Image (cartoon, rainbow, N blue to C red; front, side, top):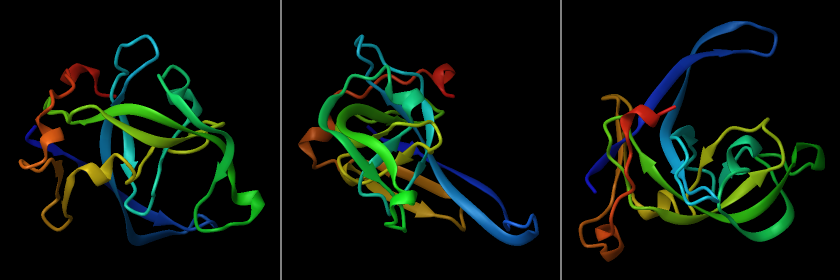
Length: 170
């Protein structure tokens, strides 16, 4: 595996009252393909790279067809607030997937834990456990460069990469 490109998106912050500001809201995006229960790979889905997320988050519409091994059937997850009203019902499971880019580059398939949200009202978040933590992550926003790469001395990195046809990117 070589370098797998990541993408930036940017828009301006809009306050709750509708006021538009000049404050940039920058997101780092990556594409993931998952192993489905029938043994095939999902299309590439675009998610937000979340360096503050220990565990990835997958909306219900994406995880329902996936192969998965349940770790905890009923749990919740949340962001900054620990208030019950801010917690999202979910299951915790082990899934398999690979990071891919629009040029056809792909990582090896990895097994990683993810919160399987019981709703579609959450974004696809790419966290560290088993996924981002398996790569060298490079981000240079000023140059608009971002990518992940596996270390050449990592024996697991020598495994075959997941095919990533560019026409499957969502």
